[in-house]
Length: 76
Length: 408
Ligand SMILES: Cc1cc2nc3c(=O)[nH]c(=O)nc-3n(C[C@H](O)[C@H](O)[C@H](O)COP(=O)(O)OP(=O)(O)OC[C@H]3O[C@@H](n4cnc5c(N)ncnc54)[C@H](O)[C@@H]3O)c2cc1C
Image (cartoon, rainbow over all chains, first blue to last red; front, side, top):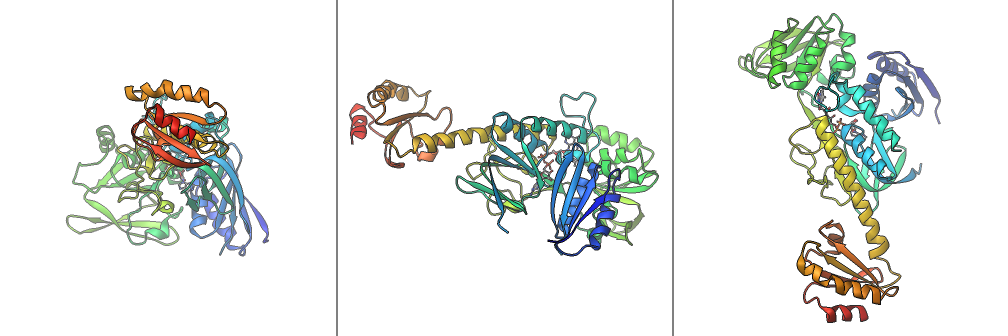
């Protein structure tokens, strides 16, 4: 099991969460888990989609109304 | 790693207007219901700032606001939500399976409500600028980031023109690339008149996207005039594509019947070609793709799934039981000849109480059980022994035949 890294994007609107996610993921190695914490719904439309397109495994938890944690398992 | 298996009555794939409505109906029917959504619950309707034609909201509503209410209502009826994408399905047979990257789910019925995704232009360079690098499909999401900027909108349908007008509240200039001749657009007349009168909007007629250029981010879209082949470079900060949608049906290819465009074929009960699999909303081949029609479809799909499950249970737990022999009388309540035999059937029901299980199946209410028994003609009598169909009597139904069948 790889390491787990939290990325706080609370209060950030598009395109900031996606840019931060891209940069954070670059620093991780295969098997690591990045957890992106967001509260702007716009990020729900592009962060998971982008990560899947890059080939990573993605699951999301709605932690509260309008607040989500996107779990990205780096796969390559 | 072995995947964890979880069991449900119904699994709904897709959490847009159609899936959420199906969820409300299934949840309210007390079915154990799971809805799987891969991104934001609410679907494509959350891409627009203004929904003015959904009844019940005379002042209009934002797409996101409206969908949040749908979501809340589905939660109220105890629908479980899982936010991940469905990778594969196995839809044949009585137990349907749906797999995500971590889990495997089993259900008696599956409702497909996967909707659509924005269509791309296919022009050179496009791929490089998707995902927040300058090409967007959601004005609501990216309007604020374009305050004071110049944007290009590709398309001239309702979505293109209405979203384009919304963008003029933020951007300095909204240039619209229209496929048609000067003054011709695909949108409704009201939107067209407003757009033509909007001082911040500019139109480039007879044009299509030809190539996208930029460094890290998009900075130029080259349009091509279809009549003259002239190339027109347009400097922009963002480009919004509204040139239609494609159905999310890749995982159903070769399994569910679809039209040439990949939209799923259903009947008016939202049944697909596979028993127990229903489809609703924009993913269907249908005339009008809107929130109001997605809601109608979702209600029907939820109701159909409920009926299908009830019927399956009756079929397996009562009709095809092995504990004692069974007689099934398949009839139609509106057919006089069928009604004639009813007293006779009821007489035997009383006489053999406890020894033979006699079930009456009215095809006027539903043809599902009859079709599972392979019976299309009424009246018919089906004899069940050891959980299997032993004999079907279609003709000469009379007291002697019936007595013989039971006594045998
Ligand atoms: C810009 C714009 C403006 C619009 N304006 C209006 C309007 O004013 N009035 C109106 O009535 N309609 C409008 N519409 C149309 C309306 O949004 C759609 O008709 C409606 O969203 C259809 O709902 P649906 O549930 O069928 O599909 P969708 O909303 O497309 O939902 C399908 C959902 O399924 C999910 N999904 C797909 N594949 C999978 C998978 N493999 N695993 C898990 N989840 C999956 C998707 O992520 C999506 O959330 C507009 C659409 C757009 C884009």
